[in-house]
Length: 62
Ligand code: SF4
Image 1 (tube, helix red, strand yellow):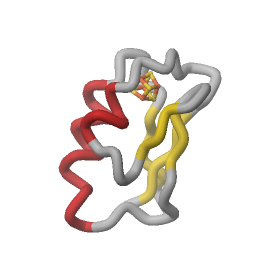
Image 2: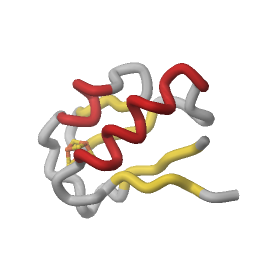
Image 3: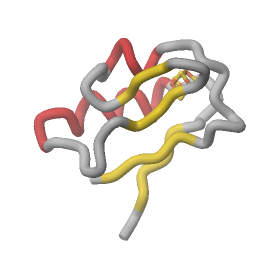
C-alpha cells in the first residue's frame, strides 16, 4: 500500500500524524515519510484516510 497527500487540500490539522506518526509528519502541511506503508500500519493509514477532514490523503493504486 502506498499513499500520498494532496498538499493543496491539507489544512494541517494533525489528525493523520496523530493516528499514524510512522507514516505521516505534519510540518507546514502533511508529508508521507515512507515509500511503502508497512503492513502493520495499514489499518492506521486507512483510519487517517477516512478521518482526514479534507480528504487530502489518497491511496495510490499501482
Ligand atoms: S488529516 Fe488531512 S488535513 Fe489533517 S494534517 Fe493530515 S492530510 Fe492534512
